[in-house]
Amino acid sequence: MDGTKRADIKVGSTVKVVQKNHQRTGELTEGVVARILTNSANHHHGIKVKLEDGIVGRVKEIIE
Image 1 (tube, rainbow, N blue to C red):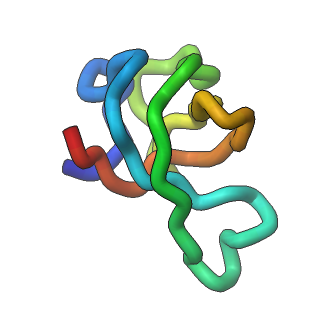
Image 2: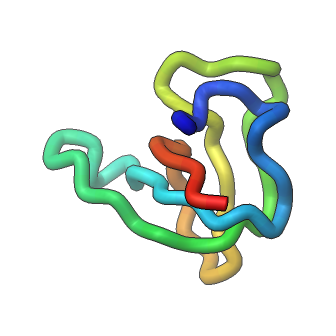
């Protein structure tokens, strides 16, 4: 699943995100969602989340 729909992402979900400074390379970081930062129901670049280790990025892939 891609991460463009807010309803698909839950706190505690394992996801892969792209950080702002890695957008050009597309490097993904895996982690567990601590907070969902995007308020809208959908976002074409991916829902912005904060991971448990403090990394902020847009969800590109939902693992579980």
